[in-house]
Image 1 (cartoon, rainbow, N blue to C red):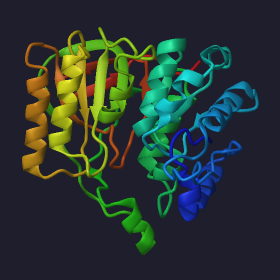
Image 2 (image 1 turned 90 degrees about the horizontal axis):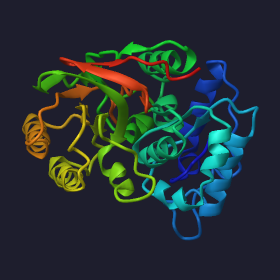
Image 3 (image 1 turned 60 degrees about the vertical axis):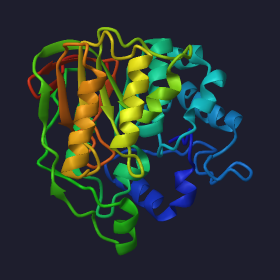
Image 4 (image 1 turned 60 degrees about the horizontal axis):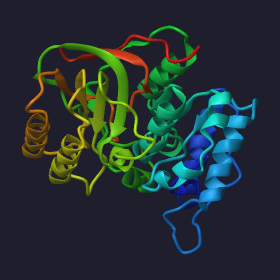
Length: 322
């Protein structure tokens, strides 16, 4: 377990212990890297540790052949600080799954871009495995299916529910998060497409634009999802304009949009209008409401794995692990 940005385990000790208990209950041996439980670096309490310490944790986790998987504890907004210090040759010489989401987008995409290794946009330790009452079975089942089988995982599972209540609120009440009907999948533009899958948190992927760690998007299936509040449709509109201006949207094979955190109907329509506006000169298929979300349940999406869009389905067509 690593904390490349925020030191969530130090700030949320009860959720951290629940998450460790849940993973160990599933049969996994969990090891926290030396600086992964940190609370801050100096006065900057948004960081788990210094750049050198966070990089050292990632290098050690990949280099240790007793470690079968590297799991992020949580996201944040500062994983990009590590890019210039990472040894991508070391990572490439010790291939293993690396999983997380949100700000971890930066590292997942950079590692895939520089090494060709498939990484995984999926559950993180604290948010998914630290839920009161245990992790959602659908999340665990798909995570294990994608990471535990050397065959294509097939269609991304559909769920008719989502949990939009804040995790902090349910933690304080010591009960599982309440569920609401799930945001439905919608075909904004019909069609079929196939290509390498590139799932991302929408504002986080902007940190890579114009850098040596930006992946190739041409011919790929980009899946974008918005983070939690205060992020909203207005901010998403600006971020989509940035992607358009940078040429990210020009040569995609297809576009998927993840579920929001229960945005009201009007804001959801605004978001979809922004997506269509940003992609107005292109004719690839676009689907929304995918279970790629900061709102549970979050399924597991291989970064760089082959996939296809068909109507309102996203299908994983390549085994993500050997």
